Amino acid sequence: MPPTITDVPGILVGHAHDTEALTGCTVVLAPDGAVGAVDVRGGGPGTRETDLLAPTAMVSEVHGIALCGGSAFGLAAATGVVEWLREHGIGYDVRVARVPIVPAAVIFDLTIGRSDRWADAAMGYTACTMATTTVAEGCVGVGIGATVGKMLGPIAAVKSGVGVWSETLADGTVLGALAVCNAFGDVWREGGGIIAGARNLEQGGFADATRLLRTPEVQQAFAGFAANNTTLAIVATNASLDKAMATKLAQMAQDGLARTIRPVHTPLDGDTVFVLSTGQRPAPHLAILGSIAADVLAHAIERCVTETTSIGGLPAARDL
Image (cartoon, rainbow, N blue to C red; front, side, top):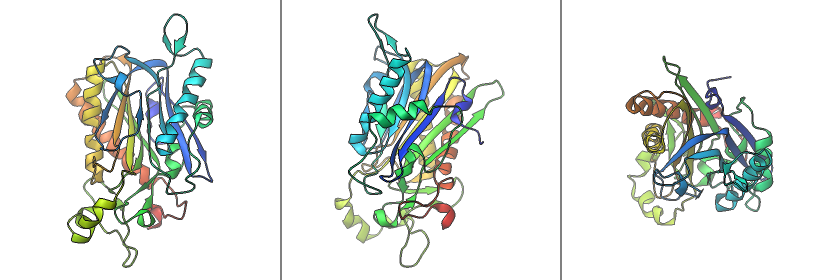
């Protein structure tokens, strides 16, 4: 198994999906609690409980993050995650009960598979029951309906999915990432060419979204494009961070998206990066931590498209 986000002690990952509707849910659990933070850069996000992750908000500890398919409908999956955590006595102690804190974000996957089924509470609950330290990649969980390279429409896209990576520093600090890439733009290999993106259906090969942006035809068509895209990521670390530091880490980790997705952070994407800090060891300088987090996340984004398979009538990068 490759380096993965669960190399951070205390982090578990579970997937659940509908293979007919091609939608799903992936949960990253921190049963012992973790300091949470978020950075939202896309113009079309679909999120739940991200306000409480602000450094000025009272609650600093979260117990899980849900990444869900189904656009706004899919936010219901977080309810199932909350219920599973409640049943296991996990949550923020308010004396009369323990309230699980579960931020969530969604991708738009309604143009692949079926548009009348999406991640729901039952699927979120099931993903929790499947949570383990072994993490599957590709067309699993929230990634089963993910696609990239949609500048020429959904029919010319390439299949994407879930990708993970991690790195352990010399002092024992671990940085892990899990991502689902459902980007409007193309995915590029750092220092190389396009791995997956909008396909030229007539001439073959990739059309190159950065080139298409400069053509009058695409510029005129932009008025008809919808915010149906999003890359979601979770960066976890065993370093001890407060909410302000974790927020800065999320901001720096976003650089990993900018290195691998072109264009990125557009009004048509809901790009969102979460951070979980389990606080098991002293943190290196934040400049070090954030710089390496961006590298780790960039590697996870690449694996979103290299580890997937053809499904839903769309080819995977390995088939092109």
